[in-house]
Image (cartoon, rainbow, N blue to C red):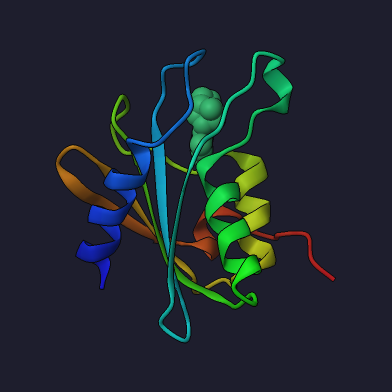
Length: 126
Ligand code: THU
């Protein structure tokens, strides 16, 4: 359920390790078969070594056996209506499809819901 994903994404954002950007991002995924995973961004003093909340959440899904992403909520406490970065769009695309729904969230809740076809048109894929 979308509202449950929102709550989980907010909770995940509180775990972010973001001492450099101070952007605390949380993501929650629901797979097509109903499993739910979350993740936060994890930064590093060597800046390029950090990674996004989407990546953490996807890694949890993979470690539970993988799956197809049906919907995802993305939240950042310091930004209105955050959207996944370009690299994460490609990562989401790897484990989703054009119908995968991305809920763009902020302190007001789910502000807009878009699908991957809109977020990453003409995605590269084998
Ligand atoms: N970030 C995410 O976690 N997800 C996104 O989709 C956009 C950016 C993180 C990466 C970095 O830790 C911080 O936000 C600022 O770019």
